[in-house]
Length: 189
Ligand code: AMP
Image (tube, rainbow, N blue to C red):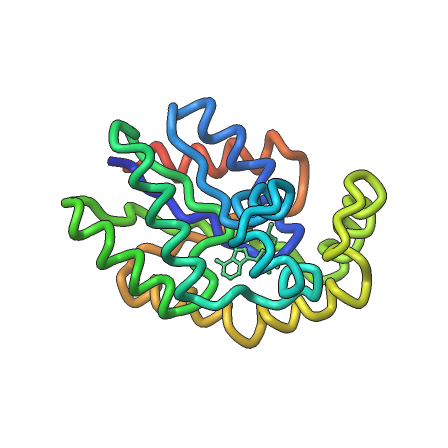
């Protein structure tokens, strides 16, 4: 299987680029943020449990997130590969993902980190807030999400660096130019 983690702060372009990658390489896209938003929309018990945390820009506890992610992977036993978007966001999540994939005889092939500076992120998210109305894109909530990113999520990078799996890609520029760079990385596997 070709399994990639698409990594980056809120607004880095993970969702946009994931869509293009799954089309080109026939992979499955699993976004934990999208899964949570679907649960909230459907008012499932999981949705009710996490909606306030997400509205506030905080991370959902690892145990809940990992269980949901594993269930989603198990729904796709025939997948040629998976793009993980927005997961893992903590080192325990990364460890759980490694163990889980290993139990299935597979592994993360590579981790692609989209590099975007903070000014550009703020501009993009302000625009997304206007377009989608996501409440966690509002300025005060966004601040919390950026804090969570720098407190907890950045530590995932050295975890994968130690495994020689980390590749950084410039996330600023035209969508298709960034996509060409991502494709060049994926083509190496
Ligand atoms: P996203 O769409 O990836 O920006 O995720 C939206 C929100 O969902 C995040 O701000 C978190 O509250 C929650 N979330 C998504 N993925 C995770 C994760 N891997 N761990 C914890 N919380 C998550």
